[in-house]
Length: 342
Image (cartoon, rainbow, N blue to C red; front, top):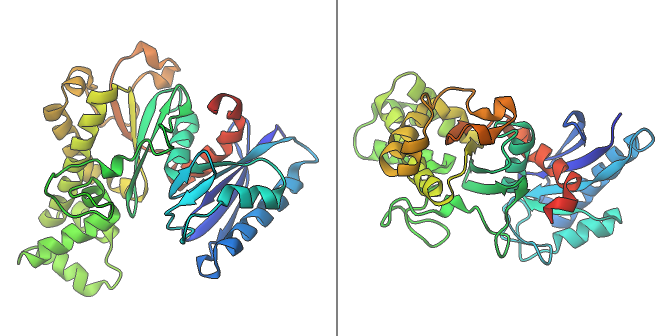
């Protein structure tokens, strides 16, 4: 067995800890319930106990390279404080110090969208692309930038907040205080809201029937109707794609990156919303229009296949490949590149 690192994905429902070797092979993964109701200290104790058990299991045959932890929320990269996290709710919390105190070792703490992007850049859709951007579509919308193979944090660690890019200047109010954010048009929450707005307008009989018959009506419910051909459900996802296209046009024009990856749970509806992305991009981004692939929907594109992204200067927009494990692999990758990532 080669040397390994521990990666942690601290989610709101599940706490996942994995040992991953230097080649990216998953050695072992442990999944626990995230018992938020018992308090932050309990969640951190559960996590640290699982990390210690998994590390001790393999240290006799390989050297541990370190520990990376991905968590939702705003992280102060200088102090290790976690601010405004849905998975560890409460006032500012010295999460990094608490983890290191329990484990008695150095830990790298990172935002979960950043770890997902790093995972996709290492082993997923952006493999062999040192420069890439990722947008994650879940309950909200997150984002991240990887430049030169390293996470780009910006001045305070808040770079990549693509979910709060303005799409509609006078649009739907957002929890951040702005109006018309991408998060209000491309998240799972937004899909459900837009579906219910369509019902309230007096039309959308298919959506109305689905709401009446399904107490757990969700973005997935809307997607199922869309792929069955329901016009109103398809219209909801056209709005998702349009919003993403507008946001991506600004990103492409601003940074001219070769690779943009769309991940998160809502990305499973890729075929329902991606045509609208490319339609908007061609209209709104001169950079994209000049560098678009002949078939932007093709599943395998660009020079990453050949290991030389610099030889093929096209702008790729594609779906993530690693699913919910992207953040887990990215978290494990953090200590492997710690010398170059800080």
